[in-house]
Length: 194
Image (tube, rainbow, N blue to C red; front, top):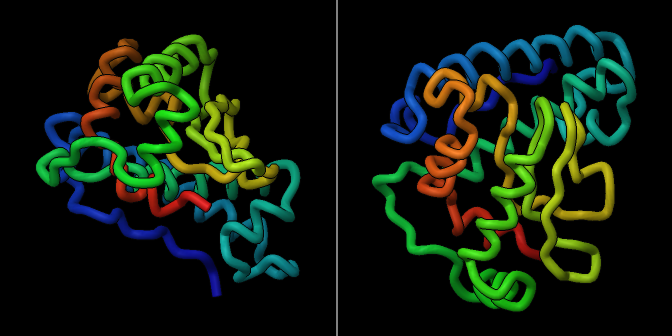
């Protein structure tokens, strides 16, 4: 059975005013849909036909990897966010303790994350990850690269692809990141801790 584009975990306008419904339509409805369609075309009739997307990412190479990993990264990104109206005061419990241990506080985590994102050249992702030893770290990946192919567990992702920010913020990545932090779902991040 071919892969299907996963539905957004909220309404297309739920991230406004930080990310517009038009941006979600374009990013999710156009780009992510095209990635899923391409994965289906490339896996048709192969051993990966109908395999879960994460399995395809872990086994694929070349163009199939690029499309599958990017589709996975996008799905992860949507689940890293929550409507701003839902509120949220930051990390709690074990996540708050890990942030304090490894960054000092949320402000420092955010400052370091943003610095990596603003230095990142071209398309890609910035991730908060949990290392194999349990410590938290920050990673930037280019293009479709993803932490799930290594030992890190992704906890939070910010898309640095043009279609994630350009419709609402043009070339102002700093404003996009400011909006991103208003939407982070700390509950989702905490649920991913090992």
